[in-house]
Image 1: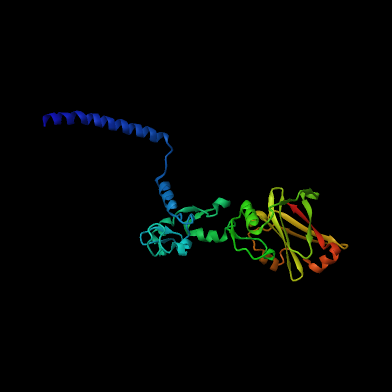
Image 2: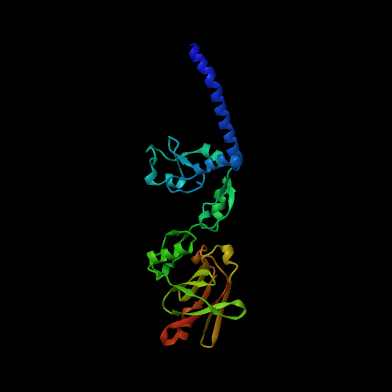
Length: 300
């Protein structure tokens, strides 16, 4: 007992000294590292919980769903047959409202779900659904004209390369860009393209870095020329466009600010917000060739 007691008394100061040196070393390292706020760590942990483990949507929009064991799902995934039982524990149902997580998330500032394609908005979690309804970077329905075949129901990101690749894969589009580069007056760029009177037409164009799609829709004896930019409404409106049809001693011109691909083409046609030419007039001008020309002018 005495020997052990002496050993204890001998070891204790040594251990205390080692402990103190370790604490001093930790303090030195901590002082050299940037200080992190405890609140930031908590917010980051909460944000990580708001990612749907199935579709990876982040943050999940309220209502947030969970299974009886508390495993989280977004509202859309919980409604699918594949997630009728929990993907993690196979328990049912998966549509229980996760009110606790929603309450915890109320005070968070979150990025828009469309941040990956350009949206820079940061909003309160309670306002995320309202923002998403108005966000200019929302996925859009495939703009491929129904006149070229059956209407396409695909939802696409506002991304030039992704939409072009979809046109190539799903609609057998050649993928060629038409460059509008002929210099005109006052900074305008222009190019004249040929179209057939009896057919719809389309082209993807690029002008000074701006990309867009020009589609021609034939309906009830009228040709509708619709030009849209691969940009948001706000950015598209900063560009100016003119379409000019000439022939038979006449000239018809349409001018407008740029329109975004996110704007519904059928709505634009119904409202007359595009270049409109009567097919019979074009047919007379075209003659036997059955081809006509339209000049596009762009002020980027």
